[in-house]
Length: 170
Image (tube, rainbow, N blue to C red; front, side, top):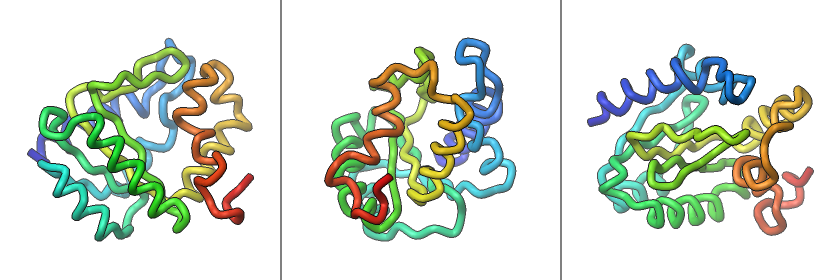
């Protein structure tokens, strides 16, 4: 299944996430395509919550981002959210963050549905890199058409009280 997941995700990144979207008036994620092209994605695939827990215990980085795929019927949105919460409680103070995309929970940005649609996946990357990318996008007006809820879901939650040690605060 990992081969099918990688192929589907790579096509989605190339054809949608990293391409200009007329509804949004911008590229949904201007950094994703470069990570893919530069082979900076560490692809993984899990079939259970137990497999996710093993990854949480052994996370390491040798690429820009770790992308963990799963079949959405095997791991529900509640389980994914629990994993993300626990992961971020443990790792955000260490400068690492996780975020999710589950096809059973619609995610939007600038009113456009962002979900991959077929697979569930979790992205794990260095927090400082994600923060720098968000700051660059903010300066370019990237978030201007996003609702307050969309912005909070993607960006501002990272700065909420209790999420970071003081050295990470903006």
